[in-house]
Image (cartoon, rainbow, N blue to C red):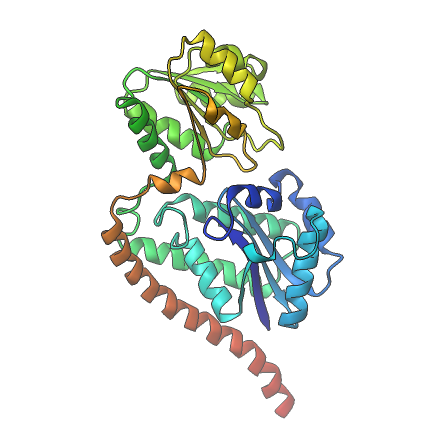
Amino acid sequence: MNLIILGVNHKTAPVEIREKLAFSEKHLEETFNALHDYPELKEKVILSTCNRVEIYARVGNIDGGLKRLKDFIYDYHKINEGELEKFFYSYFTEDAVEHLFKVSSSLDSMVVGEPQILGQVKDAYSLAKECRATGMILNQLFEKAFSVAKKVRNETRIAESAVSVSYAAVELAKKIFGDIEGKVIMIIGAGEMSELAAKHLISSGAKGILVSNRTFDRAIELARDLKGSAIRFDSIEDELVRTDIAITSTGAPHFIIKKDMVERVIHKRRNKPIFFIDIAVPRDVEPAINTIENVFLYDIDDLQNVVDGNIKEREKESRKAMEIIKKEVGQFLNWLDGLEIVPTIAALR
């Protein structure tokens, strides 16, 4: 029984490549239906986040399975075969098990120890299971990954020494403004990371929260949670005039914030600085706005440059976590080997 992982992440591919390969959560059921045309991929789970796109699969033959995984990705995203080959990584069986355990335990995250990834892996697995894309092997593998992640969190201080991605966004804001006290925040797209960033900003002294979402009811709900105000999606430009920090996370396939819009906004603000934190993949904000004076734009990749605290402690705790993971990988492989031995014993009898 062979396991394969094929993917890209923040370490192997820039954001413009990851967004080409991203799978929309809204269409994942259709994606799994498309995967039925690839019978070599006997079980599969798709994990698509801001920082990584990975497909986990059980296959009969590793070489054939890997080729079919690549065929699927190229066909689904309408990309020429081999065009993005240099950005991919792949792991097989033992290495694949170890990689999933590291991902779930947040050892492979942009910010080691951040808690969001475990929830994202759980959601990816749940959806695959709902779509009947998993079977006994991947079910056992992912359940084991969740217990390993819990063990790592309980037996190390990796979460204590970590800096979350959302907190990294706040640190950037402090570098730009010096002080966040009294700043007005706009959230565009009610995503989990944008909500976390907003909460960090509020605790740092931000005074006003504006929330916009294509679904206005969701904007109202989040605004209520944050003690802010909901605004209509078509009034974003007008409201940006009084906004100091805008956090975008819509998941739209096109730019929501464009250069000409920001030029009008900054003129009305009389050149008061405005900071855009674009944590969406695909990106929400046109990169060209960075050329406008007093406009600052950072995307999800830029957050990497902010994360520089607690490095020694993280490395120490990471080593402890890896000892746990190595042991758990061995246990899972023993279970996997046992499945292959059982039919042999039965045949001998």
